[in-house]
Length: 458
Image (tube, rainbow, N blue to C red; front, side, top):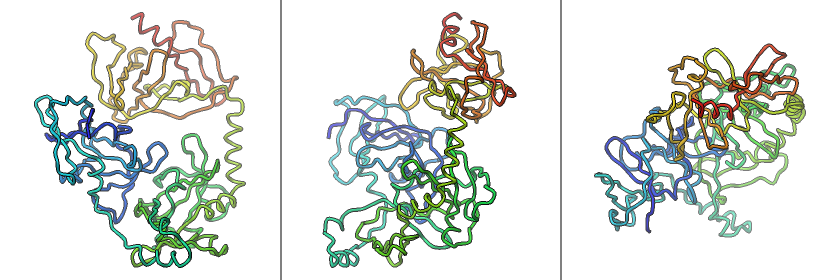
């Protein structure tokens, strides 16, 4: 194994190197849902890019104190290849460096996760084999023999017995249920606002807005005849079947497990499959399996409500010329065409640039890419807030990416042709005035080309 490039991560005075071919993205640590009964090295699971990912503490796997998730320096690294369902949580990301072959010393122990020592800038970097490191997680082992024999008697092959699937385990009414991960789009906390629907069934909690999408929320506990256990551990499972989406409220998340197909006994009785697709033989107890056919039946049951939500969204944007991200600077609202927005990130430290124009804040490193941060506050003569909950809007321009600090992101709105009035002053940073909500809400639309022009003039 010849390592060509590493990402250096640090905890205190100790530095480690991770070969960059393992790393997909470097992100701020998102909200992580803890998993009951999971090994200490697993913090829980989180949604990254629409996928459910297991968050693993790199420090604990190396025998150190765990990563402080609330630290502004902590990061989560998504992984590639065979470990793409997992991500490493680290204390701090320093930099990526190319390996000088003369300064690396490879180690020979085939079991240890530290595979080499690299001499870099007067310090020793311990290079980690991620695959060996992850194997250190103390996951329970199962003997599938009993169920495998049963399946063999029914004609199942030995190849089928060795295959695994990933399942989310969760609790309702004191009972444990399993749902295949591939049926799950994301997991949300129960604190999201839900608008009740009058005249609906008891189990229908209402509608929730999620990134411009209206989602019907159903209490899965009531659907299965359980009394809801309300608390901060409640979660909403967002499930999607083709273009239909539904949210299901449950009591709490327990774990994510790889389960051998041989340990799953599926029901053939269609009456039983109305709510339970089968059972998982897990050690000394059975876990009820919720199959996709059950979820599709629920979606079909509430199809009229889901269609209504889709129709409302389509109606609201039927005449829309474009969509705009509305943000706040001080007490005023401004907007930018959503097609120009690459991403919106949390406030992060900015590196100043010597001799830069006054309207340039500096540079930030976003997943290895250097992005210039401009100051709309200074350009518009608005006092910049010191609030920690500020956001940075990263925009795509012909000159590359540029970011702006904003005091908050209000919403994303569809803008109709009759809501647009051109800005008459050609020297303005804004191309149009948006008359939203019948003219009661006036929002200036930022023109990035004018911003660049004004930057060159100053």
